[in-house]
Length: 218
View 1 (cartoon, rainbow, N blue to C red):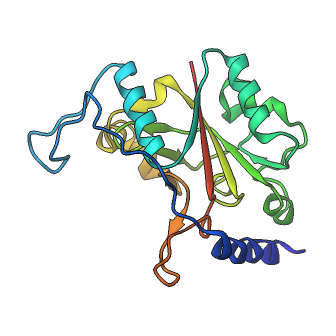
View 2 (cartoon, rainbow, N blue to C red):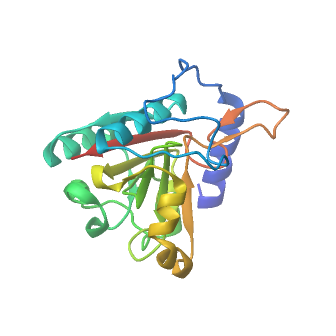
């Protein structure tokens, strides 16, 4: 099966198996002040513990599986457990934290043929920031960081360092303005891909991964 047929087959399968995630209501975190960022009085900041708690609460609300590990070895073990023996499309090893890229010597990368990339069951990436306020991951394209790794496979595993947590999208934009202006692309991942364009039925995984897993390391 060619790359095009493989992608179209995934779209057809997602149309048949779409679902609405069932998650408990997440109460506002301690650093959450309403009505929201458009209000001039709105602020959201805090310690790493506060940011992490808010980030994890938002991931839960988005139906994103998440794990917090205390050591680099634990991060690698967790990612290896999640992926198993499935084929992987990943960022280059030197762009992945905690030595995660060394788990798969034969993994597909951005330099691999398109049909090899399209056959991956898991995309494995790092991130450039994790936004606590929305549970979003930001990925700035660049050398060794192919966009396809977070967009093409049906499942996306993102490895996040604690020091990459940011309170708001505005904070991220302020810090990385020059880099963003020079980049070809910046992808924002907020939970699994979802659409209701088809007969107003919410479907996950049509335009991108239907499963997102976040592993937070030290």
